[in-house]
Image (cartoon, rainbow, N blue to C red; front, side, top):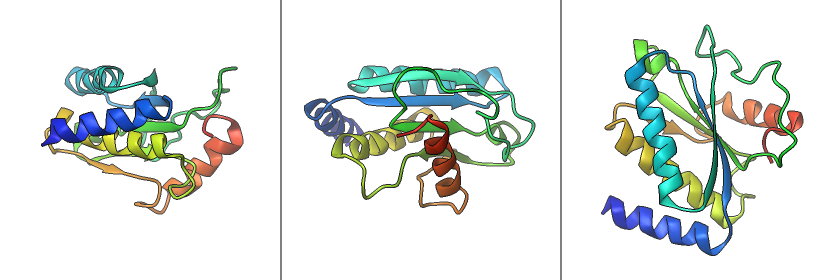
Amino acid sequence: MVILLMAAGAAAVAAQGGVRVLVIDEAKTFASTMRVAALVGGLKAAGPFEVSYRVADVDSIWDDPLAGIPPSDDAPYDLIVIVSRGIDDGTSDWVWILSDGLSSLPPPVRSGIEMIGILVDRVFGGEVRTLKVYDDFILPFLSALYVNEGWLR
């Protein structure tokens, strides 16, 4: 069933253009970082995602992993995925999927969000939750910050 959903999602994304995704790894252990690498590999294999990867050394799950870092000259990302450092020590159980809203997103980006959620569930074995932009009170603010800074479109 999961494979069928991923195939349908990949077909939808492919039919309407690729999705630029930045995956930010805040994890502190080798095992968690290997899971994040599997997530990145799964995204690249699942469809026409243009995936970038960045390690963030933050002290708290609430620190901004992109603070003080200017965005590249490339186009802004459609989605930013933040894997919380708290998954290693049990202080959080989430992966954030940031976007510029949900209702205004093009269909390929919405399909990409669903595919990322499925992959996170598979890679982390159900141990973490995916939170989208309206699932937590801080995510719309962080998304707006990243849009303003040029990281997210």
